[in-house]
Image (cartoon, rainbow, N blue to C red; front, side):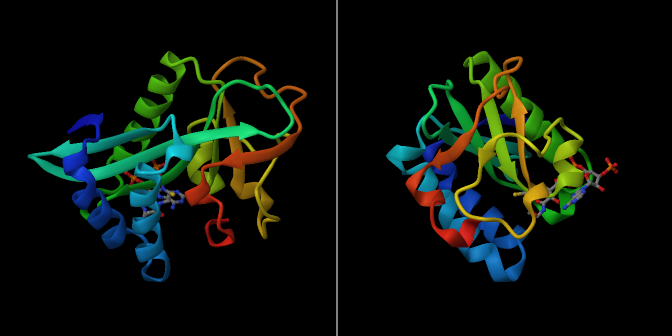
Length: 174
Ligand SMILES: CC(C)(COP(=O)(O)OP(=O)(O)OC[C@H]1O[C@@H](n2cnc3c(N)ncnc32)[C@H](O)[C@@H]1OP(=O)(O)O)[C@@H](O)C(=O)NCCC(=O)NCCS
């Protein structure tokens, strides 16, 4: 399995991967969101990585730009979405995509990464809730809104509302 930055030619495979992998009620919307983010100027800078095996894309992760209103905190990112093809799940590919993403963003001197996801899954790689960045909308399950500092104490004393890409702004994604 190889992890690399995605290209224009991968877009259709990435769309298909998300459509096949997410739950039926959200799959189409997540797949479309992914394509939208890949073409959204307000999502820049972004990082899109694919996991590839035998020429097939079996995993994808996307990080898009995020900042915090009213602060001069440096560049941040939101991790969304992440998917691994069902017949390749449970083999560490999702974790490898996250680690490669975090390592790449750290090398770009990014400050923090946010995610809205399963606390059990994301806490394994260092994300925690209870930080000072508020989500775009009130959440039914606030513990799912987590952050990870890429620079020591980047989020210390930071309070404010997240500012994310236009494509990620609709309430349905929160
Ligand atoms: C969530 C997902 C990306 C994980 O990818 P993966 O390659 O199977 O994950 P890994 O193999 O790296 O990690 C597996 C570990 O995470 C756990 N895990 C996997 N999915 C989980 C979930 N949704 N909630 C909690 N734990 C989960 C497994 O039990 C396993 O734990 P272990 O290492 O202690 O045995 C994959 O299941 C997926 O694509 N799901 C559908 C899309 C989705 O829901 N994405 C959510 C992110 S936006």
